[in-house]
Image 1 (spheres, rainbow, N blue to C red):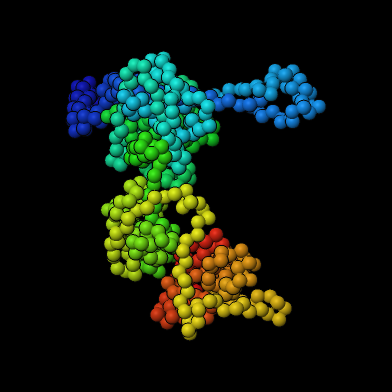
Image 2 (cartoon, helix red, strand yellow; image 1 turned 90 degrees about the horizontal axis):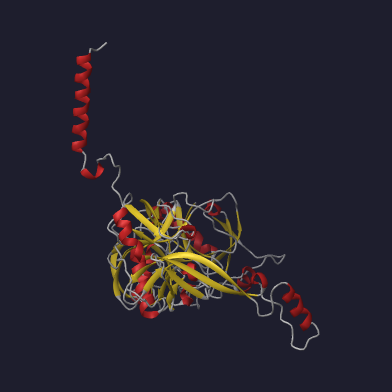
Length: 506
Protein backbone atom coordinates (compact mmCIF):
# COMPACT_ATOMS: atom_id res chain seq x y z
CA UNK A 1 0.00 0.00 0.00
CA UNK A 2 1.54 3.37 -1.03
CA UNK A 3 2.59 5.70 1.74
CA UNK A 4 1.15 9.14 2.32
CA UNK A 5 4.19 10.70 0.67
CA UNK A 6 3.83 8.48 -2.37
CA UNK A 7 0.12 9.35 -2.71
CA UNK A 8 0.93 13.04 -2.44
CA UNK A 9 3.58 12.73 -5.16
CA UNK A 10 1.19 10.77 -7.41
CA UNK A 11 -1.53 13.39 -7.01
CA UNK A 12 0.94 16.11 -7.95
CA UNK A 13 1.98 14.15 -11.07
CA UNK A 14 -1.66 13.71 -12.17
CA UNK A 15 -2.38 17.42 -11.66
CA UNK A 16 0.69 18.37 -13.68
CA UNK A 17 -0.30 15.98 -16.46
CA UNK A 18 -3.86 17.38 -16.64
CA UNK A 19 -2.50 20.92 -16.73
CA UNK A 20 -0.16 19.94 -19.56
CA UNK A 21 -3.00 18.39 -21.60
CA UNK A 22 -5.22 21.44 -21.12
CA UNK A 23 -2.40 23.72 -22.18
CA UNK A 24 -2.06 21.69 -25.38
CA UNK A 25 -5.78 22.10 -26.25
CA UNK A 26 -6.90 25.13 -28.28
CA UNK A 27 -8.42 27.87 -26.17
CA UNK A 28 -11.87 27.32 -27.75
CA UNK A 29 -11.91 23.70 -26.54
CA UNK A 30 -10.83 24.39 -22.93
CA UNK A 31 -13.56 24.34 -20.29
CA UNK A 32 -13.85 26.81 -17.49
CA UNK A 33 -15.77 26.50 -14.22
CA UNK A 34 -18.52 28.60 -15.85
CA UNK A 35 -19.04 26.00 -18.63
CA UNK A 36 -19.37 26.83 -22.34
CA UNK A 37 -19.13 30.47 -23.43
CA UNK A 38 -22.45 32.30 -23.05
CA UNK A 39 -24.44 33.36 -26.13
CA UNK A 40 -26.45 35.89 -24.12
CA UNK A 41 -24.78 38.95 -25.64
CA UNK A 42 -25.24 37.65 -29.21
CA UNK A 43 -28.90 36.71 -28.61
CA UNK A 44 -29.63 40.09 -27.03
CA UNK A 45 -28.20 41.91 -30.06
CA UNK A 46 -30.41 39.95 -32.49
CA UNK A 47 -33.75 39.64 -30.71
CA UNK A 48 -35.08 43.05 -31.79
CA UNK A 49 -34.68 42.07 -35.47
CA UNK A 50 -36.71 38.89 -35.15
CA UNK A 51 -40.50 39.30 -35.33
CA UNK A 52 -43.65 37.29 -34.77
CA UNK A 53 -45.98 37.02 -37.73
CA UNK A 54 -49.68 36.71 -36.92
CA UNK A 55 -52.30 36.29 -39.62
CA UNK A 56 -56.07 36.18 -39.78
CA UNK A 57 -58.23 34.64 -42.46
CA UNK A 58 -61.93 35.39 -42.74
CA UNK A 59 -64.03 32.23 -42.96
CA UNK A 60 -67.62 32.66 -44.11
CA UNK A 61 -70.49 31.09 -42.21
CA UNK A 62 -70.58 29.04 -39.00
CA UNK A 63 -67.47 26.94 -38.39
CA UNK A 64 -65.90 28.47 -41.46
CA UNK A 65 -68.27 26.67 -43.87
CA UNK A 66 -69.92 28.80 -46.59
CA UNK A 67 -73.68 29.11 -46.16
CA UNK A 68 -76.00 27.51 -48.72
CA UNK A 69 -76.92 29.78 -51.61
CA UNK A 70 -80.69 30.18 -51.82
CA UNK A 71 -82.32 32.13 -54.69
CA UNK A 72 -83.87 35.46 -53.72
CA UNK A 73 -87.58 35.16 -53.26
CA UNK A 74 -87.38 31.42 -52.71
CA UNK A 75 -89.83 30.05 -50.14
CA UNK A 76 -86.82 28.55 -48.34
CA UNK A 77 -84.98 31.88 -48.01
CA UNK A 78 -86.58 32.83 -44.68
CA UNK A 79 -86.20 29.28 -43.39
CA UNK A 80 -82.43 29.19 -43.99
CA UNK A 81 -81.87 32.67 -42.53
CA UNK A 82 -83.91 31.78 -39.44
CA UNK A 83 -82.07 28.44 -38.97
CA UNK A 84 -78.58 29.92 -39.14
CA UNK A 85 -79.45 32.98 -37.03
CA UNK A 86 -80.56 30.58 -34.26
CA UNK A 87 -77.09 28.97 -34.42
CA UNK A 88 -75.53 32.34 -33.77
CA UNK A 89 -74.77 33.09 -37.38
CA UNK A 90 -76.32 34.60 -40.45
CA UNK A 91 -75.80 34.55 -44.17
CA UNK A 92 -73.19 37.24 -43.62
CA UNK A 93 -71.51 35.73 -40.53
CA UNK A 94 -67.72 35.57 -40.50
CA UNK A 95 -65.17 33.79 -38.38
CA UNK A 96 -61.49 34.72 -38.03
CA UNK A 97 -58.96 31.92 -38.26
CA UNK A 98 -55.54 32.86 -36.84
CA UNK A 99 -52.05 31.44 -37.28
CA UNK A 100 -48.60 32.31 -35.99
CA UNK A 101 -45.09 32.20 -37.43
CA UNK A 102 -41.79 34.03 -37.39
CA UNK A 103 -39.82 36.42 -39.57
CA UNK A 104 -36.95 38.89 -39.52
CA UNK A 105 -36.16 42.43 -40.69
CA UNK A 106 -33.80 42.66 -43.68
CA UNK A 107 -34.22 46.36 -44.52
CA UNK A 108 -34.80 48.77 -41.63
CA UNK A 109 -35.37 51.84 -43.84
CA UNK A 110 -37.92 50.34 -46.23
CA UNK A 111 -39.48 48.07 -43.60
CA UNK A 112 -38.85 44.77 -45.43
CA UNK A 113 -39.41 41.49 -43.60
CA UNK A 114 -38.69 37.91 -44.72
CA UNK A 115 -40.80 34.91 -43.72
CA UNK A 116 -42.07 31.61 -45.14
CA UNK A 117 -44.77 31.67 -47.79
CA UNK A 118 -46.78 29.04 -45.92
CA UNK A 119 -46.92 31.34 -42.88
CA UNK A 120 -48.91 34.02 -44.73
CA UNK A 121 -50.52 32.00 -47.53
CA UNK A 122 -54.26 32.77 -47.81
CA UNK A 123 -54.20 35.42 -45.08
CA UNK A 124 -56.60 38.38 -45.24
CA UNK A 125 -54.64 40.36 -42.65
CA UNK A 126 -51.00 40.08 -41.58
CA UNK A 127 -49.50 41.70 -38.50
CA UNK A 128 -45.88 41.94 -37.41
CA UNK A 129 -45.23 41.87 -33.66
CA UNK A 130 -41.89 43.18 -32.43
CA UNK A 131 -39.92 42.21 -29.33
CA UNK A 132 -40.63 45.57 -27.64
CA UNK A 133 -44.38 44.94 -27.82
CA UNK A 134 -45.12 47.19 -30.80
CA UNK A 135 -47.26 45.93 -33.66
CA UNK A 136 -47.52 46.89 -37.34
CA UNK A 137 -49.95 45.81 -40.03
CA UNK A 138 -48.33 44.61 -43.24
CA UNK A 139 -48.91 47.16 -45.98
CA UNK A 140 -48.17 44.83 -48.84
CA UNK A 141 -46.89 41.37 -49.69
CA UNK A 142 -44.18 42.33 -52.18
CA UNK A 143 -43.84 38.80 -53.51
CA UNK A 144 -44.00 35.09 -52.73
CA UNK A 145 -42.31 32.01 -54.11
CA UNK A 146 -43.96 28.64 -53.52
CA UNK A 147 -41.00 26.65 -54.89
CA UNK A 148 -38.68 27.81 -52.09
CA UNK A 149 -41.45 28.75 -49.61
CA UNK A 150 -40.31 32.37 -49.18
CA UNK A 151 -42.25 35.64 -48.87
CA UNK A 152 -41.24 39.31 -48.64
CA UNK A 153 -43.44 41.67 -46.62
CA UNK A 154 -43.46 45.48 -46.29
CA UNK A 155 -44.45 47.53 -43.25
CA UNK A 156 -44.30 51.28 -42.55
CA UNK A 157 -42.09 51.74 -39.45
CA UNK A 158 -43.22 54.25 -36.83
CA UNK A 159 -39.84 54.05 -35.10
CA UNK A 160 -36.47 52.93 -36.52
CA UNK A 161 -36.23 49.18 -37.06
CA UNK A 162 -33.15 47.02 -36.67
CA UNK A 163 -32.16 44.80 -39.60
CA UNK A 164 -29.90 41.74 -39.61
CA UNK A 165 -27.35 40.97 -42.35
CA UNK A 166 -27.11 37.81 -44.41
CA UNK A 167 -24.03 35.61 -44.30
CA UNK A 168 -22.96 32.97 -46.82
CA UNK A 169 -24.34 29.47 -46.29
CA UNK A 170 -21.85 28.03 -48.76
CA UNK A 171 -18.96 28.34 -46.32
CA UNK A 172 -20.77 26.53 -43.51
CA UNK A 173 -19.36 23.22 -42.31
CA UNK A 174 -21.09 20.35 -40.60
CA UNK A 175 -20.50 20.89 -36.88
CA UNK A 176 -20.59 24.71 -37.00
CA UNK A 177 -22.61 26.30 -34.17
CA UNK A 178 -25.89 28.01 -35.08
CA UNK A 179 -28.65 29.83 -33.21
CA UNK A 180 -32.39 29.92 -33.97
CA UNK A 181 -34.66 32.69 -32.72
CA UNK A 182 -38.39 32.60 -33.29
CA UNK A 183 -41.94 32.12 -32.09
CA UNK A 184 -42.39 28.39 -31.28
CA UNK A 185 -45.95 27.60 -30.11
CA UNK A 186 -46.54 31.35 -29.79
CA UNK A 187 -43.70 31.83 -27.29
CA UNK A 188 -42.06 34.85 -28.90
CA UNK A 189 -38.36 35.57 -28.65
CA UNK A 190 -37.33 31.96 -27.93
CA UNK A 191 -33.63 31.22 -28.47
CA UNK A 192 -32.20 27.75 -29.19
CA UNK A 193 -28.66 26.70 -30.05
CA UNK A 194 -27.27 23.72 -31.95
CA UNK A 195 -25.00 22.78 -34.82
CA UNK A 196 -25.25 22.22 -38.55
CA UNK A 197 -26.02 18.49 -38.76
CA UNK A 198 -25.91 18.19 -42.56
CA UNK A 199 -26.02 20.24 -45.76
CA UNK A 200 -27.86 19.93 -49.08
CA UNK A 201 -30.66 17.81 -47.66
CA UNK A 202 -33.41 16.78 -50.11
CA UNK A 203 -36.67 16.24 -48.18
CA UNK A 204 -38.95 16.26 -51.26
CA UNK A 205 -40.41 19.62 -50.31
CA UNK A 206 -39.78 21.14 -53.74
CA UNK A 207 -37.72 20.96 -56.93
CA UNK A 208 -34.80 22.94 -55.51
CA UNK A 209 -34.29 21.25 -52.14
CA UNK A 210 -30.85 21.82 -50.58
CA UNK A 211 -31.79 22.39 -46.94
CA UNK A 212 -29.44 22.93 -44.04
CA UNK A 213 -30.18 20.41 -41.30
CA UNK A 214 -29.75 21.48 -37.69
CA UNK A 215 -30.33 20.03 -34.24
CA UNK A 216 -31.14 23.47 -32.80
CA UNK A 217 -34.71 23.08 -31.51
CA UNK A 218 -37.21 24.18 -34.15
CA UNK A 219 -40.93 23.79 -33.51
CA UNK A 220 -44.28 24.94 -34.86
CA UNK A 221 -44.20 28.73 -35.00
CA UNK A 222 -40.47 28.86 -35.80
CA UNK A 223 -41.34 28.81 -39.53
CA UNK A 224 -39.94 31.84 -41.32
CA UNK A 225 -37.54 32.70 -38.50
CA UNK A 226 -33.79 33.13 -38.93
CA UNK A 227 -30.97 30.68 -38.30
CA UNK A 228 -27.85 32.62 -37.30
CA UNK A 229 -24.16 31.82 -37.30
CA UNK A 230 -22.06 32.86 -34.33
CA UNK A 231 -21.24 36.18 -36.05
CA UNK A 232 -24.90 37.20 -35.96
CA UNK A 233 -25.48 36.69 -39.70
CA UNK A 234 -28.54 34.96 -41.12
CA UNK A 235 -27.39 31.76 -42.81
CA UNK A 236 -30.81 30.13 -43.16
CA UNK A 237 -34.59 30.50 -42.85
CA UNK A 238 -36.18 27.85 -40.63
CA UNK A 239 -38.96 26.16 -42.53
CA UNK A 240 -39.55 22.47 -41.73
CA UNK A 241 -39.06 19.71 -39.18
CA UNK A 242 -39.28 15.94 -39.12
CA UNK A 243 -41.25 14.85 -36.08
CA UNK A 244 -43.64 12.02 -35.24
CA UNK A 245 -44.96 14.06 -32.29
CA UNK A 246 -45.23 17.57 -33.72
CA UNK A 247 -42.40 18.80 -31.48
CA UNK A 248 -38.68 19.05 -32.02
CA UNK A 249 -36.69 15.82 -32.04
CA UNK A 250 -33.52 17.53 -33.23
CA UNK A 251 -34.15 17.32 -36.99
CA UNK A 252 -34.94 20.76 -38.36
CA UNK A 253 -34.40 22.25 -41.81
CA UNK A 254 -33.55 25.76 -43.00
CA UNK A 255 -33.43 27.29 -46.48
CA UNK A 256 -29.77 28.27 -47.12
CA UNK A 257 -29.11 32.01 -47.13
CA UNK A 258 -27.46 31.88 -50.58
CA UNK A 259 -30.81 30.73 -51.98
CA UNK A 260 -32.77 33.22 -49.86
CA UNK A 261 -30.81 36.30 -50.95
CA UNK A 262 -31.23 35.41 -54.64
CA UNK A 263 -34.99 34.88 -54.35
CA UNK A 264 -35.62 37.88 -52.08
CA UNK A 265 -33.85 40.28 -54.45
CA UNK A 266 -36.13 39.05 -57.26
CA UNK A 267 -39.26 39.33 -55.13
CA UNK A 268 -38.29 42.90 -54.28
CA UNK A 269 -37.61 43.87 -57.90
CA UNK A 270 -40.19 41.84 -59.84
CA UNK A 271 -42.70 40.58 -57.26
CA UNK A 272 -41.93 36.99 -58.32
CA UNK A 273 -38.97 34.67 -58.76
CA UNK A 274 -37.39 34.66 -62.22
CA UNK A 275 -35.52 31.42 -62.72
CA UNK A 276 -33.14 30.37 -65.41
CA UNK A 277 -34.12 27.70 -67.93
CA UNK A 278 -31.85 25.31 -69.82
CA UNK A 279 -34.33 22.98 -71.53
CA UNK A 280 -33.09 19.45 -70.86
CA UNK A 281 -34.31 16.32 -69.15
CA UNK A 282 -31.61 14.79 -66.97
CA UNK A 283 -31.05 11.66 -64.91
CA UNK A 284 -28.61 10.24 -62.40
CA UNK A 285 -25.72 8.18 -63.71
CA UNK A 286 -26.09 4.96 -61.75
CA UNK A 287 -23.41 2.29 -61.58
CA UNK A 288 -24.76 0.26 -64.52
CA UNK A 289 -24.99 3.26 -66.84
CA UNK A 290 -21.61 4.56 -65.64
CA UNK A 291 -19.95 1.22 -66.41
CA UNK A 292 -21.38 1.17 -69.94
CA UNK A 293 -20.42 4.80 -70.59
CA UNK A 294 -17.05 4.32 -68.86
CA UNK A 295 -17.54 7.32 -66.57
CA UNK A 296 -17.67 7.84 -62.81
CA UNK A 297 -20.96 6.86 -61.18
CA UNK A 298 -23.22 9.47 -59.52
CA UNK A 299 -21.16 12.40 -60.83
CA UNK A 300 -22.61 14.84 -63.33
CA UNK A 301 -26.05 14.86 -64.99
CA UNK A 302 -26.87 12.68 -67.98
CA UNK A 303 -28.95 14.47 -70.63
CA UNK A 304 -31.76 12.11 -71.64
CA UNK A 305 -33.67 14.62 -73.80
CA UNK A 306 -33.24 18.14 -75.19
CA UNK A 307 -36.29 20.36 -75.65
CA UNK A 308 -36.65 21.76 -79.16
CA UNK A 309 -35.75 25.44 -79.62
CA UNK A 310 -34.54 25.65 -76.02
CA UNK A 311 -31.35 27.38 -74.78
CA UNK A 312 -29.74 23.93 -74.56
CA UNK A 313 -30.64 23.07 -78.15
CA UNK A 314 -29.39 26.42 -79.42
CA UNK A 315 -26.18 26.02 -77.42
CA UNK A 316 -25.41 22.62 -78.94
CA UNK A 317 -26.24 20.23 -76.09
CA UNK A 318 -27.17 16.75 -77.25
CA UNK A 319 -28.91 13.74 -75.81
CA UNK A 320 -26.29 11.53 -74.16
CA UNK A 321 -24.11 14.45 -73.03
CA UNK A 322 -22.96 14.35 -69.42
CA UNK A 323 -22.99 17.83 -67.86
CA UNK A 324 -19.94 18.06 -65.58
CA UNK A 325 -19.69 21.82 -64.96
CA UNK A 326 -22.23 24.62 -65.19
CA UNK A 327 -21.04 28.23 -65.16
CA UNK A 328 -17.75 27.13 -63.58
CA UNK A 329 -19.45 25.13 -60.80
CA UNK A 330 -19.00 21.36 -60.62
CA UNK A 331 -22.17 19.28 -60.98
CA UNK A 332 -21.36 16.80 -58.22
CA UNK A 333 -24.81 15.19 -58.39
CA UNK A 334 -27.70 15.25 -60.84
CA UNK A 335 -30.13 16.95 -58.46
CA UNK A 336 -27.76 19.89 -58.03
CA UNK A 337 -28.07 21.01 -61.67
CA UNK A 338 -31.70 22.30 -61.55
CA UNK A 339 -30.76 24.55 -58.63
CA UNK A 340 -27.68 25.92 -60.45
CA UNK A 341 -29.74 26.63 -63.57
CA UNK A 342 -32.60 28.23 -61.62
CA UNK A 343 -30.23 30.61 -59.81
CA UNK A 344 -28.56 31.78 -63.04
CA UNK A 345 -29.69 35.25 -64.21
CA UNK A 346 -31.96 35.15 -67.27
CA UNK A 347 -30.07 36.11 -70.42
CA UNK A 348 -26.62 35.34 -69.04
CA UNK A 349 -24.34 33.38 -71.37
CA UNK A 350 -22.48 30.71 -69.44
CA UNK A 351 -20.06 27.86 -70.14
CA UNK A 352 -21.39 24.31 -69.90
CA UNK A 353 -18.73 21.61 -69.77
CA UNK A 354 -19.90 18.23 -71.03
CA UNK A 355 -18.48 14.79 -71.69
CA UNK A 356 -19.53 13.53 -75.10
CA UNK A 357 -18.45 10.08 -76.21
CA UNK A 358 -15.31 10.24 -74.09
CA UNK A 359 -14.33 13.78 -75.08
CA UNK A 360 -14.68 16.93 -72.98
CA UNK A 361 -16.35 19.88 -74.70
CA UNK A 362 -17.22 23.37 -73.47
CA UNK A 363 -20.41 24.88 -74.90
CA UNK A 364 -21.74 28.40 -74.49
CA UNK A 365 -25.42 28.66 -73.62
CA UNK A 366 -27.58 31.78 -73.19
CA UNK A 367 -29.92 30.98 -70.30
CA UNK A 368 -33.63 31.52 -70.89
CA UNK A 369 -36.42 32.27 -68.44
CA UNK A 370 -38.34 29.39 -66.88
CA UNK A 371 -42.04 29.99 -67.46
CA UNK A 372 -44.75 28.05 -65.65
CA UNK A 373 -45.30 25.98 -68.79
CA UNK A 374 -41.81 24.51 -68.62
CA UNK A 375 -42.38 23.36 -65.04
CA UNK A 376 -45.39 21.18 -65.79
CA UNK A 377 -44.69 17.49 -65.31
CA UNK A 378 -46.36 16.65 -68.62
CA UNK A 379 -43.90 18.68 -70.69
CA UNK A 380 -42.97 16.71 -73.79
CA UNK A 381 -39.27 16.76 -74.68
CA UNK A 382 -38.15 16.73 -78.29
CA UNK A 383 -37.39 13.28 -79.67
CA UNK A 384 -35.03 13.06 -82.62
CA UNK A 385 -36.76 12.24 -85.90
CA UNK A 386 -35.99 8.81 -87.33
CA UNK A 387 -33.35 8.49 -90.00
CA UNK A 388 -34.61 7.58 -93.45
CA UNK A 389 -34.06 3.98 -94.51
CA UNK A 390 -33.87 2.65 -98.04
CA UNK A 391 -35.17 5.91 -99.46
CA UNK A 392 -38.32 5.73 -97.31
CA UNK A 393 -39.83 8.49 -95.20
CA UNK A 394 -38.53 7.07 -91.92
CA UNK A 395 -41.94 5.83 -90.78
CA UNK A 396 -42.25 2.75 -88.65
CA UNK A 397 -43.47 -0.28 -90.57
CA UNK A 398 -47.13 -1.19 -90.45
CA UNK A 399 -48.26 -3.25 -87.48
CA UNK A 400 -48.40 -6.98 -88.04
CA UNK A 401 -51.16 -9.12 -86.58
CA UNK A 402 -51.39 -12.80 -85.82
CA UNK A 403 -54.18 -14.94 -87.29
CA UNK A 404 -56.27 -14.32 -84.16
CA UNK A 405 -55.87 -10.56 -84.55
CA UNK A 406 -53.41 -10.15 -81.66
CA UNK A 407 -50.38 -7.95 -82.07
CA UNK A 408 -47.34 -9.71 -83.54
CA UNK A 409 -44.35 -9.29 -81.22
CA UNK A 410 -40.71 -10.28 -80.95
CA UNK A 411 -38.99 -11.37 -77.74
CA UNK A 412 -35.67 -9.77 -76.71
CA UNK A 413 -34.07 -9.09 -73.31
CA UNK A 414 -37.03 -10.75 -71.59
CA UNK A 415 -39.37 -8.29 -73.30
CA UNK A 416 -42.03 -8.72 -75.93
CA UNK A 417 -41.76 -5.80 -78.32
CA UNK A 418 -43.81 -4.38 -81.18
CA UNK A 419 -43.15 -1.42 -83.54
CA UNK A 420 -45.01 1.77 -82.66
CA UNK A 421 -47.82 2.36 -85.13
CA UNK A 422 -51.01 4.40 -85.03
CA UNK A 423 -53.12 1.63 -83.54
CA UNK A 424 -50.35 0.78 -81.06
CA UNK A 425 -50.22 4.43 -79.96
CA UNK A 426 -53.94 4.33 -79.31
CA UNK A 427 -53.77 0.97 -77.54
CA UNK A 428 -51.03 2.03 -75.10
CA UNK A 429 -51.87 5.75 -74.85
CA UNK A 430 -48.57 6.87 -76.38
CA UNK A 431 -47.71 10.36 -77.55
CA UNK A 432 -48.20 11.15 -81.26
CA UNK A 433 -44.44 11.75 -81.55
CA UNK A 434 -43.46 8.40 -80.01
CA UNK A 435 -41.35 6.17 -82.29
CA UNK A 436 -39.52 2.94 -81.55
CA UNK A 437 -40.46 -0.39 -79.98
CA UNK A 438 -43.25 -0.60 -77.42
CA UNK A 439 -43.01 -3.11 -74.56
CA UNK A 440 -46.12 -5.32 -74.64
CA UNK A 441 -45.09 -7.96 -72.09
CA UNK A 442 -42.28 -8.45 -69.56
CA UNK A 443 -40.73 -11.55 -68.04
CA UNK A 444 -40.84 -10.71 -64.32
CA UNK A 445 -37.57 -12.58 -63.75
CA UNK A 446 -35.67 -10.82 -66.54
CA UNK A 447 -32.95 -8.15 -66.00
CA UNK A 448 -35.17 -5.67 -67.87
CA UNK A 449 -37.88 -6.10 -65.22
CA UNK A 450 -35.29 -5.47 -62.50
CA UNK A 451 -34.45 -2.16 -64.24
CA UNK A 452 -38.09 -1.02 -63.90
CA UNK A 453 -38.95 -1.21 -67.58
CA UNK A 454 -42.76 -1.38 -67.77
CA UNK A 455 -45.44 -2.41 -70.24
CA UNK A 456 -46.18 0.60 -72.44
CA UNK A 457 -42.62 1.94 -72.31
CA UNK A 458 -41.04 2.66 -75.69
CA UNK A 459 -37.44 1.77 -76.51
CA UNK A 460 -36.28 4.70 -78.62
CA UNK A 461 -32.56 3.98 -78.93
CA UNK A 462 -30.12 1.15 -78.30
CA UNK A 463 -26.49 2.10 -77.80
CA UNK A 464 -27.19 5.64 -79.09
CA UNK A 465 -28.73 4.34 -82.33
CA UNK A 466 -32.42 4.60 -83.10
CA UNK A 467 -34.43 1.37 -83.25
CA UNK A 468 -37.68 1.07 -85.19
CA UNK A 469 -37.91 -2.71 -85.46
CA UNK A 470 -36.95 -5.74 -83.41
CA UNK A 471 -34.32 -6.47 -86.04
CA UNK A 472 -32.69 -3.08 -85.29
CA UNK A 473 -32.44 -3.92 -81.60
CA UNK A 474 -31.26 -7.48 -82.27
CA UNK A 475 -28.48 -6.17 -84.52
CA UNK A 476 -27.30 -3.67 -81.88
CA UNK A 477 -27.14 -6.44 -79.27
CA UNK A 478 -25.21 -8.70 -81.66
CA UNK A 479 -22.72 -5.89 -82.42
CA UNK A 480 -22.10 -5.43 -78.70
CA UNK A 481 -21.72 -9.17 -78.18
CA UNK A 482 -19.11 -9.39 -80.94
CA UNK A 483 -17.12 -6.56 -79.34
CA UNK A 484 -17.03 -8.46 -76.04
CA UNK A 485 -19.78 -6.53 -74.25
CA UNK A 486 -22.69 -7.97 -72.31
CA UNK A 487 -24.92 -4.94 -71.62
CA UNK A 488 -26.89 -2.65 -73.92
CA UNK A 489 -27.68 1.00 -73.18
CA UNK A 490 -31.35 1.70 -73.90
CA UNK A 491 -33.10 5.05 -74.17
CA UNK A 492 -36.61 4.42 -72.83
CA UNK A 493 -39.61 6.77 -72.99
CA UNK A 494 -42.81 6.38 -70.98
CA UNK A 495 -46.33 7.35 -72.05
CA UNK A 496 -45.90 10.87 -70.63
CA UNK A 497 -42.76 11.49 -72.69
CA UNK A 498 -40.35 11.21 -69.76
CA UNK A 499 -37.06 9.72 -71.00
CA UNK A 500 -34.39 7.76 -69.15
CA UNK A 501 -31.25 5.81 -70.01
CA UNK A 502 -31.08 2.23 -68.73
CA UNK A 503 -28.26 -0.31 -68.95
CA UNK A 504 -29.64 -3.84 -69.43
CA UNK A 505 -27.45 -6.98 -69.36
CA UNK A 506 -28.06 -9.78 -71.84
